[in-house]
Image 1 (cartoon, rainbow, N blue to C red):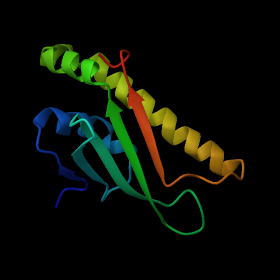
Image 2 (image 1 turned 135 degrees about the vertical axis):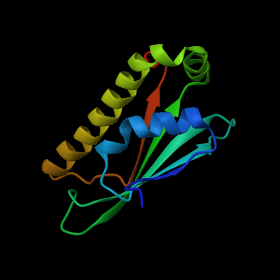
Image 3 (image 1 turned 90 degrees about the vertical axis):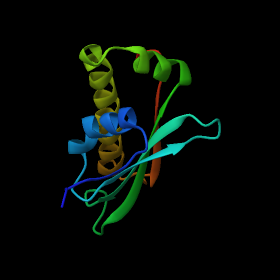
Image 4 (image 1 turned 180 degrees about the vertical axis):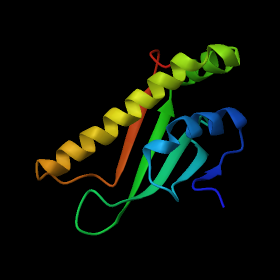
Length: 121
């Protein structure tokens, strides 16, 4: 059995999910889900152990602006590394911010969204 679960209809969206998967614990689910305008998003469901004394279900939504997603899809596979790096950096920074909030004694939201625009592609 694979450590992560991918429920993505589109291979390009699953590819993006795999870029960030190792930032999350095993058994994390990566689900492709359209937003209200039909643009695919990556919805990450995981159980966080580091935001309290008990396990917490968390959701991180990666929302990519339609124009940036279209540019990414038009980019040849061999040139997608920059987009991968940007995605990974934004998700890492978001997780780091959640850890900082928890360390500062603040309440950590159970759902957070990472929005990517022109910097992505």
